[in-house]
Amino acid sequence: MVKTRIEEYCKKLKLSGILTAYSSLSDRAAKENLSFSEFLFLLLESEYETRNERSKQTILKFAGFPKIKTIDTFDFSFSSLDKTLINEILTMRFVDETKNILLIGPSGTGKTHLAIAIGYAAAQHRIKTKFITMADLAITLEAAETQNRLDSYIKKVINSARLLIIDEFGYFKLNERHPLIFVSLSSYQIPPHSSTPFPNLATNI
Image (cartoon, rainbow, N blue to C red; front, side, top):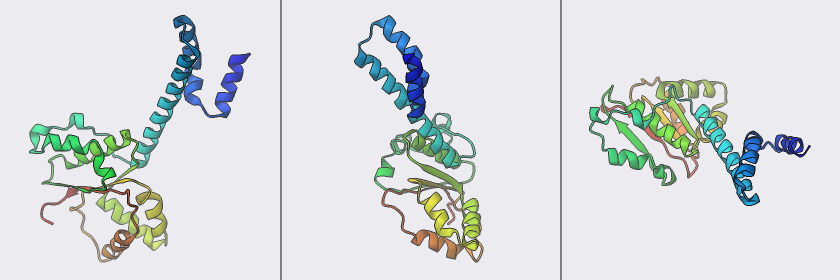
């Protein structure tokens, strides 16, 4: 049966979007008397949307957000932020332009919420993002350095992200070893497409 063969090839070629949508789109094409080109377009559109959504979910998983926050739930009335500027940031042009962002302000003003919202928007643009607190980054880098895996960690996690978000940047007290480790991090060859917002830089630094 042709339908069975089509489904088999979809599985072999990993065309899960077409596999899922083929039956319903085939019925729709027959009912609406769609041309072959129109039917093919709908199949390819379904495959694209499936892969696009899967890519976004993979990026979100890698990002490691503690919880999902979006700009829609951010209370602009609680802060003096320029909404136009935030909307410009959410276009993600700053990533392509390799610009950094510093979110500065007292505790409880929504910097972490905004940082996650920017990261979530980046994921929707399929920009590989990594979210980590300064404390976790310092501890992880120290452990990696102790185990002689510092270069490996930086390559696989830090450098593989186009957007690195470091939360609570100014609220973690470094010990005597951390500065040397961060020198290694900062002196590492960062790719030209990398961009780093520091969403919680303390105002007293």
